[in-house]
Amino acid sequence: FVFSTIYNQIVVGPTAVEQESKTDTTIDPVVADELDAYARRILPALKTHEYKCVGEYVGIRPGTNQRDYQFHVHAQPPWLSVAGIRSTGLTASLGIGQHAMHLLLPLLASVKRQGQSPSTT
Image (cartoon, rainbow, N blue to C red; front, side, top):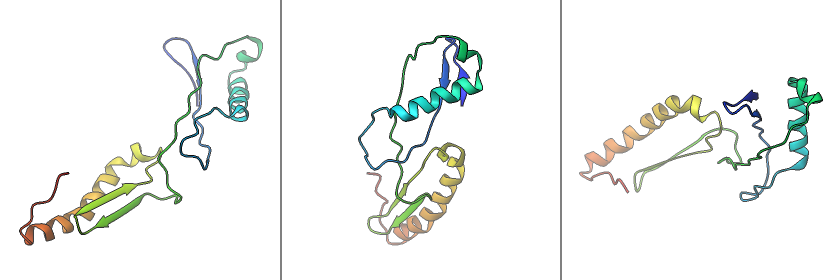
């Protein structure tokens, strides 16, 4: 994406670059140059104007080795793990919640039949 902020700054990105490290948040100069070239291609006026980069940001996305969302149901203690939610998670959040509910309902029903109280911790 290339867009302007209310402060008249141009924003370029985001990117999605796979990496092994879960802690390295350094800016890759090759990716920064690619974003600069992309912005200049989309906004030709940038080619003739000098501008200053006011910020570069890196975030580590919470992904897994699999490309799909991960849903894991654990009977004891009753627990549902949902992982691997990437940038599509906002759009898919209602479906993710509905799927999680369908996975949890039978588990919670069995806990109730056993006379236990589902733990909230």
